[in-house]
Length: 94
Length: 416
Image 1 (tube, chains in turn green, purple):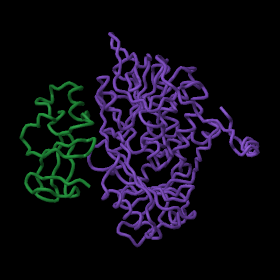
Image 2 (spheres, rainbow over the protein chains, first blue to last red):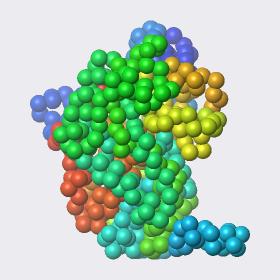
Image 3 (cartoon, rainbow over the protein chains, first blue to last red):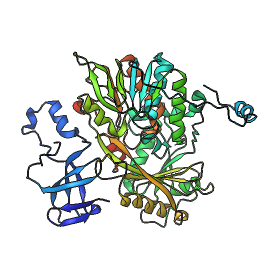
Image 4 (tube, rainbow over the protein chains, first blue to last red):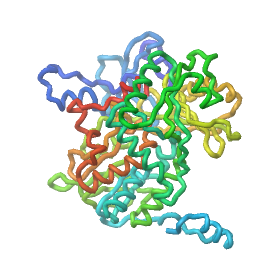
């Protein structure tokens, strides 16, 4: 079980959280003009990084808020968490 | 290859069973092959076997970064069934199920296929409606699947507790042709049969790069044991497919999650079939050694660690204890995790890629073992002919762009 450091509440056990997948996935600004490839990219294609992964979590059984985390998917070690809207750390493969 | 038979066993018994040879060679990589398979699990070894057996390609190597069958082939709960909802899926999985029925004879290797029946429990009105829809769709597609009342389910599997639980059993879908097989034997049987046809099985050989010609074609791979050239490369690397495909510059719609399983201490034969409960998330059967083989759900997050959270396995055990109160005092012996590659529609990808000469067989998610022989067969066809077999033609990489999903995820209506 992971221990996750919610930026609002502090360290809590994993069952309090919901995973939200890869962070910083931007919806195409003009969906009607997006090509099929760009739209499929947005909907279905994730980096599935083996290494440092920027990802969303939600403290669903706590404060309810979304935040981002940087985790190494080879070890499940968290390097840190940061608030939504903050830029991804330079280490992240985004 | 030394054939296995009762007579061979008897004759070699006279020599104290000391005259058996290793079942496959410890092959050293040669500089070039006609085709390479990346990934020495059942799907990859099987593909190499069918390339040699059915397509006359004997200069083939299987590259495995660890030991063969050490990935998801050796980490699953060995359940075999084909009662999927959509015609494309049911046809593909039933293709595999037909191979299972005489695989032991075809490979001269006892894969211990045991069609003891797979029963999927319905616990809610929604479950019951979905499973009945599956039953009717399967019957229309010529795949056996039948609806059981709770009493019929209990008659088929007497240890089952149908009433006194939080989510009572409202019925079940039963596929009698489904069952289990011995997962290690599948890898070893394909390896031995492929080796006998000239295929090199190269273990401890991790692919670190994909070689491309100036025109973009695949030329081979770079490995921890040097460069190996081949005009065709088939990737069957399960949870690590994304990593290999990234080396070739190909994006795949996969996410890799840990999936855990565990076995109990061995007990006498007490459990006659396979029972799955998607809603309260537990899978159980009894191995021929007597261990109860129990499958849990995936962890919530993507990972490559081959381990998961204890709360996931304990959740599965709570469900098992509710459904089968007689197992409450059993102790668990071992637990482990595998990394499963999950697609957005929970259907596999067996296809050509945008890179000429590069083929991929991935996205089997939590249910790839059952498909092993059928998947290997159509993958070999795709590699040898540079075009898909009719059965895997719908399972392209482009379906995500074109919107032609085979949405078993929605059909199952549970978290996978």
